[in-house]
Image (tube, rainbow, N blue to C red; front, side):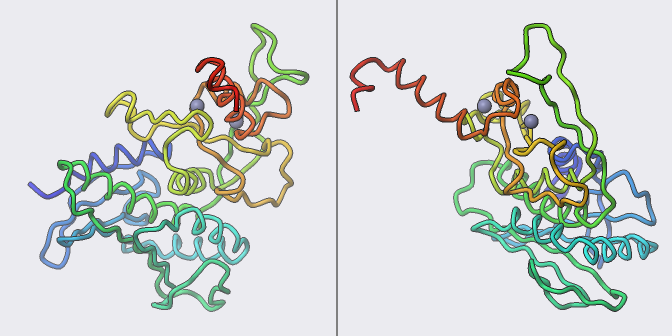
Length: 291
Ligand SMILES: [Zn+2]
Ligand SMILES: [Zn+2]
């Protein structure tokens, strides 16, 4: 038995990213490590994310397969042509605790840096997060593992080809008439799984309008569940626009998400938050609304 069940990390990250990940144990340097990897690209041309731990911290690192040269070339090509894709995702992932290091040929890259023009020898992504002194059962290790592996995955995915993005949009006019169907717009391509994870890493998994936290409300069933809403409708973004996961995306619950889309263009989540605050004041009675 190892210190961490990789299939549980894979399951949580699959829920969070919308991709299919699997967990496995990997033997390396005489040790056995938990590892998670996306189903595609397949072995031996894909990559895994290796997890390790020290007494006080947990680490994740990008581990390309033996024949992953085309994958690394693809990442280089993407970040060459759209440096803001890396910058945006790094901005979302940088938290107040922990450390995320992206390096090319051993030299650390920060958001906004010019990337080396020659063919990259190595590309590495490592994330470390301290384990809090207070132990609240075994799940703290799992939570930290999901965070560090998720950060590494988001950086790598940001460097992979774009994928189609769906965004619900209400029919024209003022909101949805009863019984009217919701239009789903799929006319944009972006690094959606990477952006989604960077957005969640930045804002957390609570609804930014009403504050519900699904893991708190529903227990393990609610782990990693949240919708991610495009603050500017996808249909209005220009062709070459690179989504910034902090400025352009926001996590909201399905109820609040539906309420945002009752107007066209959608309300901003802050307007919805104000509406909810006013409603709450009203319910607390006249004494609370005097201020
Ligand atoms: Zn909500
Ligand atoms: Zn939306």
